[in-house]
Image (cartoon, rainbow, N blue to C red; front, side):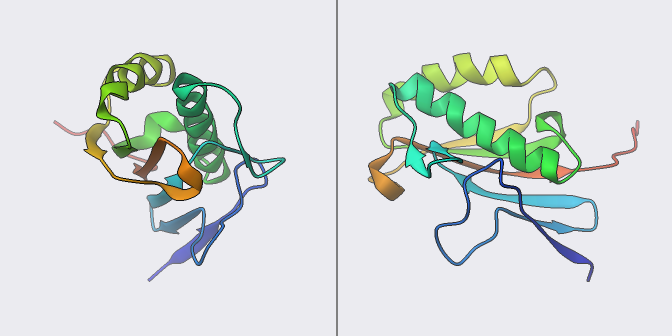
Length: 132
């Protein structure tokens, strides 16, 4: 199997036993990102909207390190400690993605690392060939 670790200083470094992403052939598995600022490894200042934007910026940085971008994400998982924030995720996601949007799941969870309110992970596919 062709497996490659994806790592970039432009996204938070792993705070556990995992990689920022793993590439297997043309598929990239993006690890969960929380709203950490890469330079400080501290939770971003601001409200949940600022945190959601930071998570998308972190995902974007890892996607770019894998020679892709957010438009290559085919599956996005969103974890929220408060599902009433889901409309804010939709609003901000529209700033980062265009149709066709990735498949997505949104899950309410009791807690997330560092006490944050949002985490996202996903799957990217590179070099896709259109088909009918």
